[in-house]
Amino acid sequence: MVDRSSGEGQGSGPSSASDRALTAPGLHGRVIEHPYAGALSFMRRRYSRDCTGADVVVCGIPCDITTTARPGARFGPRGIRAASTHLAYGEHWPWGFDPFDRLSVVDAGDVHFEPGYVESMLKATEAEAGRILDAGASILALGGEHLVSLPLLRAHAARQGPLALVHFDAHTDTWDDEPELGHGNMFHHALGEGLIDVEHSVQVGIRTHNHETHGFQILDADWVQAQGAEAVSRRIGEIVGTGKAYLTFDIDCLDPAFAPGTGTPVVGGLSTQFARQVLRGLTGTDFVGMDIVEVAPDYDVAEITSLAAATLALDYLCLLAADRPAVATGSKD
Image 1 (cartoon, rainbow, N blue to C red):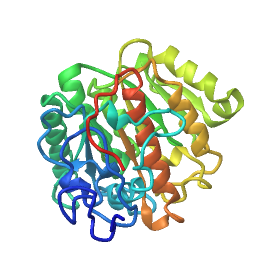
Image 2: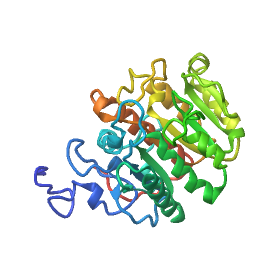
Image 3: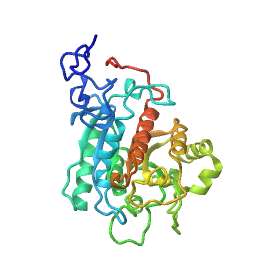
Image 4: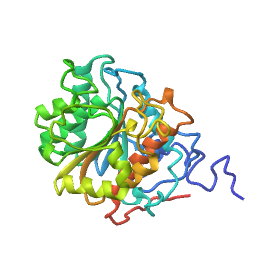
């Protein structure tokens, strides 16, 4: 009989089946760990600043400097990591496979910057993103307010040129009547800096008014709901085409019934399942990076917002892994 309280029969010592974020022997596969215990990396991935051999690097950007309504998105990366422990146990439904058998993923922790200083956050985030990209890995970023997308786009565009933007949100974030850079106008600035291939960019789930589209194709919430997930995925694919794309998902794209833990909730949004179905239909899109932002756990109910964000991030990893063979040699229990 195995004494699981002592860890016997599970590895080389009493702690071998715990804190896999610190003790995992490799970058593929996973070992089941209790969701209420252990170090809180994203999906129990190994914590490491070393990107060598990683296909994807997760990084948190705990920032809510320019938040205009309810603050608290600085706690988003921690909340998403904690909620992800409920998902870290094998094949991801309905994909039918474990993405960590196909992708090597590490969690590099959080970007460090001076609290309250926008320029410090912008420079530190762009530098960290550049370090990861230069190591040959792609980025899954956990926000944090939506302003963090700007330095991430800067780092990507510096190496890959302007990118098609696939933007899920309740707001366009392209308002041009605000003098200071913030989480409501960073895509207007990104356009001005030449970071976005706007002809092949799309905004999904929009349900706040903006007189100017700035060239984006907009699939508003009414159109999305009327057409259905399959049609939305197909239309996104038609707009983006075959070029490289960046995915940014503001959690307030979801209706507050599914994501109350956010700074600027707007009713009439997508359900979590609808958003997942749309993402699953984007297997033909060449995504080079993703961020998921604006999770504010203090306003959450039973972790449902953080869990939705963690699930959508995991769906994104499945998108990247869908056409890859399994290579894992790590153990599972």
